[in-house]
Image (cartoon, rainbow over all chains, first blue to last red; front, side, top):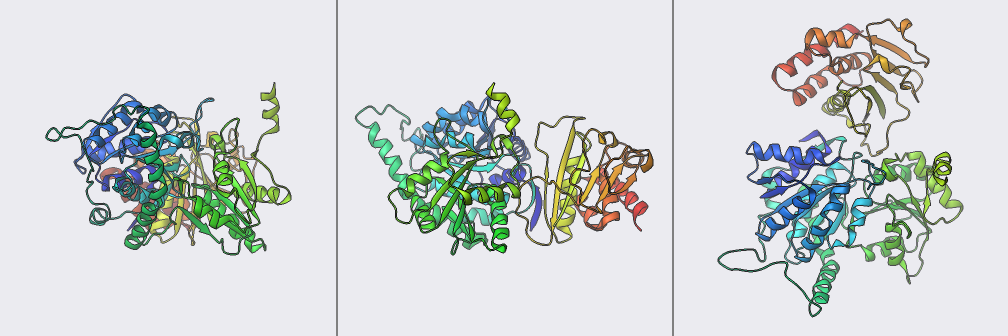
Length: 392
Length: 179
């Protein structure tokens, strides 16, 4: 039965159903309620789990890394500056092939201090070697956690997974959420079986030196896993759909794409508003579709080629950028399409940074702008007065 | 789709009021979405929250700029915050105040209704938190959510004596304003 639940609380409840044996996290807006709820669930004895209080995100990540090396299912969650403070450990987690799941409540990065939503935190960490999944709504965010553990712990994968959901927009929204039963979760997500673990009876070392003679090969192995793991990610989505009857696509989701001429491309919660725009513009005779990127790392190159080639126009909406470079998602998409036939014209917009609200009218204005000419990395919604002020 | 905006100050339960309306509507069989204005909330600062209620699934994730109805939990906000911004024609503006409408310095237009919600909350709950009274009044005036839905929503949200007193407070407002 569905229950109207705050996004963060719904995620805490879902994570508890996944039976992590160690949770360690440091509270940071807008992720705090996950940590609070999980600590309550553990304290009340509902979840047999070590909840380890720490002094920072660096420590939180280190604790779950250690727990995972010891062979248990481990979970953490953070946001923004907290994720950046974890950065060093995240690279280690991935390099040590530890299937930790981390929830990131996507938030802007300082300075200026900003607690609101964009994707700069997670996309800055994209090269750590983690799998990055993006949820469109809170039901998908919850369901994605079951899939995340399943993908991470698959012996063909053994990489940490980051589940991303837009800070505040989703984390603090109350939506009707369907919670699976413990029996269902146990069936979909059986107990974690480590490939290797720290064990006094069978001593091993983890995270050792890999010199010039073997570092290249360890990184190659990770890159190869990123190439093969889409099969596991697809299967996790299909199995979930079969068992729970909820389908969000696999690596991507295509909305009204069959006859689409103009395709709106993005990730996360903005996709929902984009679907409304597609419906509205279709009613006015424009063939608009939406391409949702659900799995950002590994980047779904083949799916992107299949979805976009042959279309007239792709409009990419970005909530992050590589300052001095181009939109991060745009760079990935353009690289995917290079050398392909029937590549669409591409316009890309930077918008919504630091929590600037994105209205239906904004997305419609962006489509109208891109119909007139192709634009590259245009900041949408700038206040000219503030731009002038900052120019001084 | 019906869009509602709630205004108040931090500590007055503006987010909880939105949650209760969404839960009540959901229990009435509707699709719902509720969320706060996003900020570093603190006691006394102006805050707002939003509710969407629809017969169809709700997707849009922007804030609400053209509400059908507005709930104002603190009359001292009038003049500071434009509580009438974007209000659709004929929309209800439900204001918590002991003063008559004529004494409020209202510039906008709308169907303004007042209720002494803080007074009722003090009498029944013993705390100056007007949100559940406002929710009961809103149900009576609009019929968008049912009183039965609100009762059930409160049973989900609160426990024991707190739940019981809040239901009584909401019912009092509901009965005062129900035509």
